[in-house]
Image (cartoon, rainbow, N blue to C red):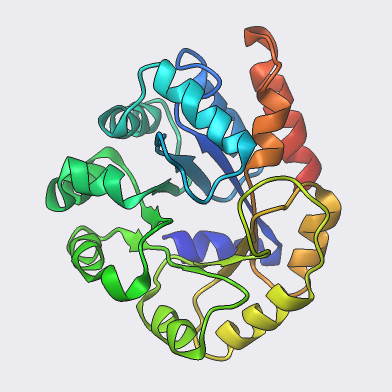
Length: 255
Protein backbone atom coordinates (compact mmCIF):
# COMPACT_ATOMS: atom_id res chain seq x y z
CA UNK A 1 0.00 0.00 0.00
CA UNK A 2 2.71 2.49 0.98
CA UNK A 3 4.94 1.85 -2.03
CA UNK A 4 2.04 2.11 -4.47
CA UNK A 5 0.87 5.37 -2.89
CA UNK A 6 4.32 6.91 -3.13
CA UNK A 7 4.71 5.92 -6.76
CA UNK A 8 1.26 7.18 -7.77
CA UNK A 9 0.84 10.26 -9.99
CA UNK A 10 4.50 10.28 -11.10
CA UNK A 11 5.37 13.17 -8.80
CA UNK A 12 7.53 13.61 -5.73
CA UNK A 13 5.53 12.28 -2.79
CA UNK A 14 5.33 14.46 0.31
CA UNK A 15 5.67 12.66 3.65
CA UNK A 16 5.16 15.06 6.57
CA UNK A 17 6.38 14.04 10.02
CA UNK A 18 4.43 15.22 13.05
CA UNK A 19 4.85 14.13 16.66
CA UNK A 20 1.69 12.50 17.99
CA UNK A 21 -0.27 14.88 20.20
CA UNK A 22 1.64 17.98 19.12
CA UNK A 23 0.94 20.81 19.46
CA UNK A 24 -2.12 19.57 21.34
CA UNK A 25 -4.30 16.48 21.50
CA UNK A 26 -7.59 18.27 20.87
CA UNK A 27 -6.72 19.31 17.32
CA UNK A 28 -4.40 16.46 16.37
CA UNK A 29 -6.79 14.26 14.39
CA UNK A 30 -8.12 17.29 12.52
CA UNK A 31 -4.48 18.16 11.82
CA UNK A 32 -3.79 14.71 10.34
CA UNK A 33 -6.84 14.90 8.09
CA UNK A 34 -5.95 18.41 6.96
CA UNK A 35 -2.44 17.25 6.07
CA UNK A 36 -3.93 14.51 3.89
CA UNK A 37 -6.30 16.96 2.18
CA UNK A 38 -3.39 19.30 1.52
CA UNK A 39 -1.66 16.72 -0.67
CA UNK A 40 0.49 14.51 1.54
CA UNK A 41 0.93 10.97 0.23
CA UNK A 42 1.91 9.35 3.55
CA UNK A 43 1.94 10.65 7.13
CA UNK A 44 4.77 9.78 9.49
CA UNK A 45 3.63 10.05 13.11
CA UNK A 46 6.26 10.23 15.82
CA UNK A 47 5.80 8.29 19.02
CA UNK A 48 7.16 10.66 21.70
CA UNK A 49 10.23 9.53 23.56
CA UNK A 50 12.07 11.12 26.48
CA UNK A 51 15.43 10.49 24.80
CA UNK A 52 14.96 10.84 21.02
CA UNK A 53 18.54 10.23 19.91
CA UNK A 54 18.13 11.11 16.22
CA UNK A 55 16.27 14.34 16.80
CA UNK A 56 17.36 17.95 16.87
CA UNK A 57 15.96 20.57 19.22
CA UNK A 58 12.71 21.06 17.28
CA UNK A 59 11.50 17.47 17.41
CA UNK A 60 12.91 17.04 20.92
CA UNK A 61 10.70 19.96 21.90
CA UNK A 62 7.62 18.50 20.21
CA UNK A 63 8.24 15.15 21.89
CA UNK A 64 8.48 16.83 25.29
CA UNK A 65 5.23 18.72 24.69
CA UNK A 66 3.48 15.53 23.55
CA UNK A 67 4.57 13.70 26.72
CA UNK A 68 3.26 16.62 28.79
CA UNK A 69 0.01 16.26 26.85
CA UNK A 70 -0.30 12.68 28.09
CA UNK A 71 0.80 10.90 24.92
CA UNK A 72 2.48 7.50 25.14
CA UNK A 73 2.81 4.59 22.72
CA UNK A 74 -0.65 3.21 23.46
CA UNK A 75 -2.23 6.64 23.02
CA UNK A 76 -0.53 6.92 19.61
CA UNK A 77 -2.23 3.73 18.46
CA UNK A 78 -5.58 4.89 19.84
CA UNK A 79 -5.27 8.20 18.00
CA UNK A 80 -4.45 6.48 14.70
CA UNK A 81 -7.51 4.28 15.16
CA UNK A 82 -9.74 7.30 15.84
CA UNK A 83 -8.27 9.13 12.85
CA UNK A 84 -9.15 6.16 10.63
CA UNK A 85 -12.70 6.24 12.00
CA UNK A 86 -12.90 9.94 11.13
CA UNK A 87 -11.77 9.46 7.56
CA UNK A 88 -7.95 9.45 7.40
CA UNK A 89 -7.18 7.22 4.42
CA UNK A 90 -3.55 7.67 3.36
CA UNK A 91 -0.86 5.35 4.77
CA UNK A 92 0.38 5.99 8.30
CA UNK A 93 3.95 5.20 9.31
CA UNK A 94 4.80 5.26 13.01
CA UNK A 95 8.30 6.43 13.86
CA UNK A 96 9.84 5.77 17.25
CA UNK A 97 12.69 4.19 19.13
CA UNK A 98 13.30 0.61 20.12
CA UNK A 99 12.19 1.22 23.69
CA UNK A 100 8.77 2.41 22.47
CA UNK A 101 8.17 -1.01 20.97
CA UNK A 102 10.09 -3.16 23.44
CA UNK A 103 8.39 -1.69 26.51
CA UNK A 104 4.99 -2.24 24.88
CA UNK A 105 5.97 -5.81 23.81
CA UNK A 106 6.98 -6.40 20.21
CA UNK A 107 4.30 -8.93 19.32
CA UNK A 108 1.51 -7.00 21.03
CA UNK A 109 2.68 -3.71 19.54
CA UNK A 110 2.66 -4.99 15.96
CA UNK A 111 -0.71 -6.67 16.42
CA UNK A 112 -2.27 -3.56 17.97
CA UNK A 113 -0.65 -1.30 15.38
CA UNK A 114 -2.18 -3.32 12.58
CA UNK A 115 -5.59 -3.23 14.23
CA UNK A 116 -5.27 0.53 14.67
CA UNK A 117 -4.70 1.16 10.98
CA UNK A 118 -0.92 1.59 10.96
CA UNK A 119 0.79 0.68 7.68
CA UNK A 120 4.47 1.11 8.43
CA UNK A 121 7.06 1.33 11.19
CA UNK A 122 10.39 3.12 11.57
CA UNK A 123 12.63 2.31 14.55
CA UNK A 124 15.28 5.00 14.39
CA UNK A 125 17.86 3.55 16.77
CA UNK A 126 17.68 -0.14 15.80
CA UNK A 127 20.52 -1.40 13.57
CA UNK A 128 19.30 -3.51 10.69
CA UNK A 129 21.29 -6.56 11.83
CA UNK A 130 19.46 -6.47 15.19
CA UNK A 131 15.99 -5.84 13.80
CA UNK A 132 14.90 -9.38 12.92
CA UNK A 133 12.49 -9.81 15.90
CA UNK A 134 10.55 -6.69 14.88
CA UNK A 135 10.76 -7.40 11.15
CA UNK A 136 9.33 -10.87 11.75
CA UNK A 137 6.33 -9.44 13.59
CA UNK A 138 5.72 -6.64 11.09
CA UNK A 139 5.67 -9.22 8.31
CA UNK A 140 3.12 -11.32 10.22
CA UNK A 141 0.88 -8.28 10.58
CA UNK A 142 1.34 -6.87 7.07
CA UNK A 143 3.13 -3.75 8.33
CA UNK A 144 5.96 -2.33 6.25
CA UNK A 145 9.26 -2.11 8.10
CA UNK A 146 10.97 1.06 6.88
CA UNK A 147 14.76 0.96 7.38
CA UNK A 148 17.06 3.97 7.44
CA UNK A 149 20.28 4.41 5.49
CA UNK A 150 22.82 7.17 5.95
CA UNK A 151 25.33 8.60 3.50
CA UNK A 152 28.08 6.59 5.22
CA UNK A 153 26.23 3.24 5.33
CA UNK A 154 28.40 0.33 4.28
CA UNK A 155 27.80 -1.66 1.11
CA UNK A 156 26.76 -4.62 3.27
CA UNK A 157 24.11 -2.59 5.10
CA UNK A 158 22.78 -1.04 1.88
CA UNK A 159 22.42 -4.48 0.32
CA UNK A 160 20.70 -5.89 3.44
CA UNK A 161 18.27 -2.99 3.67
CA UNK A 162 17.42 -3.26 -0.02
CA UNK A 163 16.41 -6.88 0.53
CA UNK A 164 14.16 -6.43 3.55
CA UNK A 165 12.45 -3.07 2.90
CA UNK A 166 8.82 -3.10 1.78
CA UNK A 167 7.05 0.29 2.02
CA UNK A 168 10.00 2.55 1.27
CA UNK A 169 13.64 3.09 2.21
CA UNK A 170 14.45 6.19 4.25
CA UNK A 171 17.73 7.79 3.15
CA UNK A 172 19.10 10.35 5.59
CA UNK A 173 20.42 13.37 3.72
CA UNK A 174 23.02 14.50 6.26
CA UNK A 175 25.24 13.17 9.00
CA UNK A 176 23.74 14.21 12.31
CA UNK A 177 20.32 14.89 13.77
CA UNK A 178 17.05 16.20 12.37
CA UNK A 179 16.43 19.91 11.90
CA UNK A 180 16.03 22.60 9.28
CA UNK A 181 19.31 23.54 7.60
CA UNK A 182 20.87 24.30 4.26
CA UNK A 183 21.95 21.01 2.76
CA UNK A 184 23.64 19.77 -0.36
CA UNK A 185 22.33 16.63 -1.98
CA UNK A 186 25.43 15.19 -3.69
CA UNK A 187 26.13 12.42 -1.17
CA UNK A 188 22.54 11.38 -0.59
CA UNK A 189 21.92 11.37 -4.35
CA UNK A 190 24.75 8.86 -4.76
CA UNK A 191 23.26 6.77 -1.95
CA UNK A 192 19.82 6.81 -3.57
CA UNK A 193 21.26 5.87 -6.94
CA UNK A 194 23.04 2.91 -5.35
CA UNK A 195 19.84 1.78 -3.63
CA UNK A 196 17.81 2.07 -6.83
CA UNK A 197 20.19 -0.34 -8.57
CA UNK A 198 19.32 -2.95 -5.95
CA UNK A 199 15.56 -2.61 -5.48
CA UNK A 200 12.35 -1.20 -6.96
CA UNK A 201 11.10 -0.13 -3.52
CA UNK A 202 10.55 3.67 -3.38
CA UNK A 203 13.24 5.78 -1.77
CA UNK A 204 12.47 8.80 0.44
CA UNK A 205 14.92 11.44 1.60
CA UNK A 206 14.65 13.20 4.96
CA UNK A 207 16.53 15.22 7.60
CA UNK A 208 17.03 18.90 6.88
CA UNK A 209 14.30 19.16 4.24
CA UNK A 210 12.77 22.60 4.67
CA UNK A 211 10.99 23.99 1.63
CA UNK A 212 9.77 23.60 -1.95
CA UNK A 213 13.29 24.00 -3.33
CA UNK A 214 14.51 21.03 -1.27
CA UNK A 215 11.55 18.96 -2.45
CA UNK A 216 12.28 19.82 -6.08
CA UNK A 217 15.94 18.85 -5.71
CA UNK A 218 15.03 15.56 -4.03
CA UNK A 219 12.49 14.83 -6.75
CA UNK A 220 15.28 14.75 -9.33
CA UNK A 221 16.63 11.49 -7.92
CA UNK A 222 14.26 10.12 -5.23
CA UNK A 223 10.58 9.24 -4.94
CA UNK A 224 9.59 11.15 -1.81
CA UNK A 225 10.63 13.94 0.54
CA UNK A 226 10.12 13.74 4.31
CA UNK A 227 9.50 17.03 6.13
CA UNK A 228 9.40 17.16 9.92
CA UNK A 229 11.13 19.99 11.76
CA UNK A 230 10.00 22.59 9.23
CA UNK A 231 6.34 21.69 9.85
CA UNK A 232 6.74 21.49 13.61
CA UNK A 233 8.47 24.89 13.70
CA UNK A 234 5.56 26.47 11.87
CA UNK A 235 3.08 25.07 14.39
CA UNK A 236 5.14 25.98 17.44
CA UNK A 237 3.65 29.40 18.06
CA UNK A 238 0.23 28.83 16.51
CA UNK A 239 -2.90 29.52 18.45
CA UNK A 240 -5.44 26.68 18.41
CA UNK A 241 -7.63 28.25 15.74
CA UNK A 242 -4.68 28.67 13.37
CA UNK A 243 -3.02 25.23 13.64
CA UNK A 244 -4.96 23.63 10.79
CA UNK A 245 -4.64 26.57 8.37
CA UNK A 246 -0.90 26.86 9.02
CA UNK A 247 -0.30 23.17 8.34
CA UNK A 248 -2.47 23.18 5.23
CA UNK A 249 -0.73 26.20 3.79
CA UNK A 250 2.73 24.75 4.38
CA UNK A 251 1.98 21.30 2.93
CA UNK A 252 0.28 22.86 -0.10
CA UNK A 253 3.39 24.94 -0.71
CA UNK A 254 5.46 21.77 -1.00
CA UNK A 255 3.21 19.70 -3.25
